[in-house]
Image 1 (tube, rainbow, N blue to C red):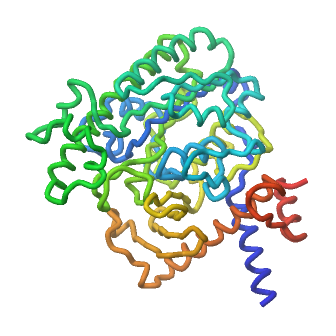
Image 2 (image 1 turned 90 degrees about the horizontal axis):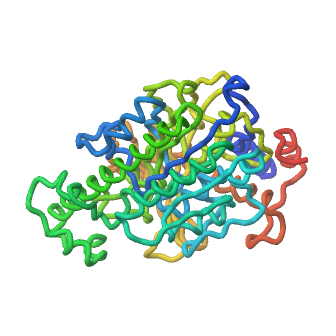
Image 3 (image 1 turned 180 degrees about the vertical axis):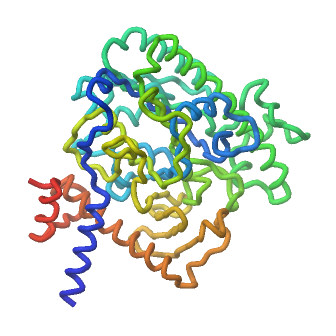
Amino acid sequence: MKKTSQNGRIIIIIFLAVFLCLVFSSVLPAKERDNLNVVLIVIDALRADHLGCYGYARDTSPNIDRFASQGILFTKAFSQGACTRISIPSLFTSLFPDVLRIPIGGIELPEKLITLPEILEKNGYNTASFLPSGFSVLPERFKFNNVISYEKGVNQIAPRINQQVAAWLKENSAKPFFVYLHYLGAHYPYLPPEPFDAMFLHDAYPEMEEFAEDKIAILKPPREWEKDMRDFIVSQYDGRIRYVDGYIGEFLDKLNELKLTENTLVIITADHGEGFLDHGSFSHSNNLYDELIHVPVIMRLPPVLPAGEVFSGLVRLVDIMPTVFGILNIASDSVMQGASLLSPDGKLKAAGLESFSQAHILAHEGWLKKGARTERWSLIGTYDNNGDEVSLEFYDLEKDPEQKDNLAGQKAPEFQMLKRRLRDYIASCRKLRDFLLGEGHIDKPVLFNEEEEEALRNLGYMR
């Protein structure tokens, strides 16, 4: 029994070693790294498979597609959460949700956790965020120099963001900067202005005003409405993407006009996707199927990063932060569970064996979905408010990309393997949370034994 316990601890330490990544590597010659800027664009609720560069048939994203042809497109990129409150904290800390433990009602990010903009500021960067007013809680927790937010008004936010960021860049681009732009883009309500409301509307569907008046009708439409309502909603969702795509293009043109294109790393991504009855419901937050966590990740830095490259290895949003540090040649002693997507010689590499994600189950307060995904397999577990496993789903994505055939009952070796990985992930995150926050946080402290402390010390995570 003692030997089994020791083996379990060793597995957790090995697992921890795989995920914790301190990025000290450089990928660029020193002079090419001088004065590099970073722009991170997050398009809220944007499914990767609704962009032309990801194979979508509709012409929703001509500017993003052009941008992808100038940089690197990651085809298998996954968010760590099915809602903004979970995914963005992971993006800005490079820590998985089981370390952060974001509550349903808000974001409680402990002061001890070091964030991407905070590290960049310490390295001489001016940092600013431009986003809707309701999202200002995010950058306030993440310690930006400047937080510029706008009142609600879905179709007014993108142009106002572009106006203000253009003015800010004119005043602040003499010094290296990090800018975070959060466009509501594809988020509910799907009400694009003319002519985008009719751009993909080929048949007579219900009036937009009727469906916009009642959100419940969207989330739980009567069964006889399902197909017609779905087709209509998707046409409006696609119209919203095309609408915000125009402002993405406008911003990229402004960078060029200000002669900032050549020395600015631009990353376009999304916090999560959106469901359209793929698995019986609209919107997001409640589950971890691919339509909710498969997001675009595209990076451009001419002439350093290759143009038109498509990378099919599995990557995660937690990998963006260490990748930025690697490109900028910034060494940080903060603990990161992501890994740089570029090797020291500048070549692309897969970040890890799997991605982990989390979702709140709104119908059951305190219940969670936790998912583990490899390039081929997907495991989704449901856990009650005591942390006990309620059910499991397991999918072979090669044979069943739509995740319809649950194989959890067949006990395949891959199922057992991924189930162990998810269990080890949960255990290692609990250990890491205690290591980062120490005694006094809300969880009962979990102490490392001497063997574990030595392993972490050898890895550089303890002194």
